[in-house]
Image (cartoon, rainbow, N blue to C red; front, side):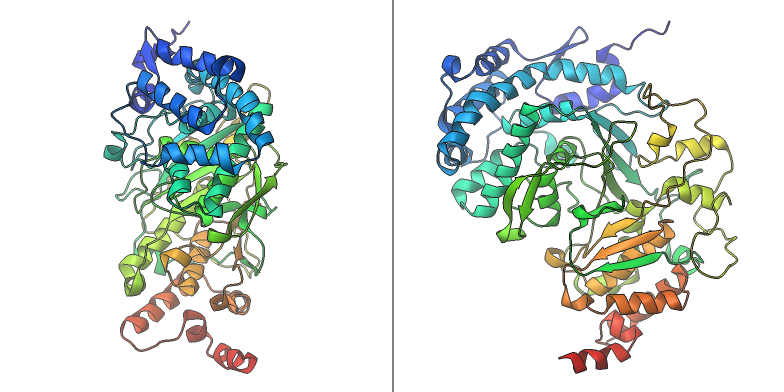
Length: 562
């Protein structure tokens, strides 16, 4: 019988332990004794703890941090006032009473269970999927990897964030984003605007929900990497020749002038318009697309604990994050608008069929976005996030037929930067978290030995996206639209659903995409047109947008409509 690995010998635990508030001794994770006393007192309720205000809540947080020797890691300057403002002034007397009598004691009990939850996580991590490491660890830059966490463990981690218990002094060395909630609360004192109040209301609502009933599913976080150098059995970072020589057909393109990405019901991969730091300003003052998603799906915040900043050849994919809140508005008009019951189906790993991919665009690129170097950066970033690894590999080996609704073409081609392989080991090794459930026995939740069997058809998983890298990041929306279409097509996605959010610059997108599809262009054809257009922009030979440059007739139509 195989001996169980000691906790002290686990590489995954040792990588994350300096960033956790727990101690490890004799293969046991535990809180310091003083922290246990404080948490037990909180768990007993306000009759025992006398904790019934935001002021006393923050003082208890300070005591807990002192018990963990975190006093040298100062919290945000106005955090104390922020906790007071929210719990003593902004919420109603009934809500405050419920928080201190029911929610906070339940959270304290959850934190008391945190060490045992984490131990159980590591005991199961090696057997969840054969040959794949899933244990909680730092998913370092340039190291593709997967972490699978139970929703209960995520709830405990976010409880630590609320209590500001994560050590932060060394996080900068690893380029890790903010994880404690002190800055979020401090913003209420610095500028008590309604969007910040609503962000915190989303988080507090999440805790109310999970304390009423702990969810029993799981969430997976994967770091995807396109290697910068040639490696066997994987797709490497493409160059210009890769794109201009591609004969892969363009996928279907659907334009939605209204609606939201997170409300799509097609099972598509939903794009997070990310900051290179996962979560962006979610725990600060940010309140645009990424930050809003992190508020309504707070389990995403857990990834901020262990995912360092993204490099140009990386993306992050999350499967299973549950949505808990409704909202209205955007940016300064963002408002929490009540409970949301997530009815997405769950797969055999216990993950909701919500797939989110985080890709960060160039920030304020100006004219450089038209240079080939930066065109490649953006299209390869999107390709890294959109590529259906299993389907792409099978296509390259001739196992998947051309699924585009165009005339039969000669698609027996080889991308110049791809070193294909036909061995079955590679097929299993290249499986992404989207298709892991196909290898899992729903009765045992362990990987099957016959993982080399053909994968289930993933044709239903397209891309749901919108104005990535535009808005606050200042990118050219017409250019970014086409770049995403090219990346989705090259990544073997069957369709892209594009939400324009009513952006005027994209009012002709439907006409343009239809015209391109009617002419049966390939990825290479459209890429070469983009390159030609960008060269003319840089030379000052055109001042038109890409759509008008491509179809000059659009200009006269626009003028007639004004």
